[in-house]
Image (cartoon, rainbow, N blue to C red; front, side, top):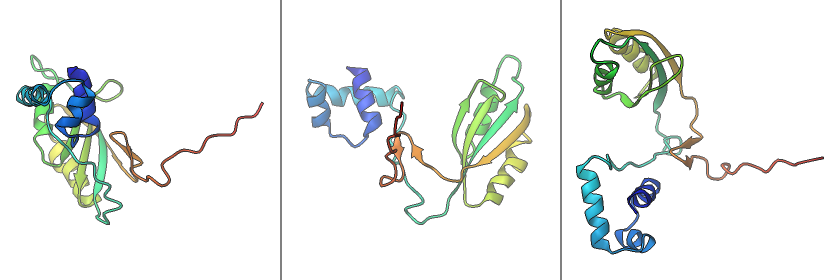
Length: 161
């Protein structure tokens, strides 16, 4: 039941406890207790709103930054990740497999602001070898939500034999 509850909350953080209880065939008290316990254990780490900034007529610049680094003895990548994660510009930070070790999502007001962050704050961190900045030009889908609802449904492709 816990996995199902978490999946429902992940899809809709505003779902009513009464609806959760009905969907999970249990009572509201049990749901409230489980949610509280998950929040205390940081299983539920926060509640977020997905904002379509383009429709809000608000300029925001986002970038993905690939970071190559060298792990520290006895600390691995955790120490570098802790330093990076503490910058308020960093929206998301992932340790990944592949050609780089980290992928960051950065928010800023301008491209210059993001470039300055990379040049003056990120790149000088000890253990970081290279960075590659990719500016996000358009967001089509965020956390499972299609941003352009009118044009978001793909057309079915005609199949011919």
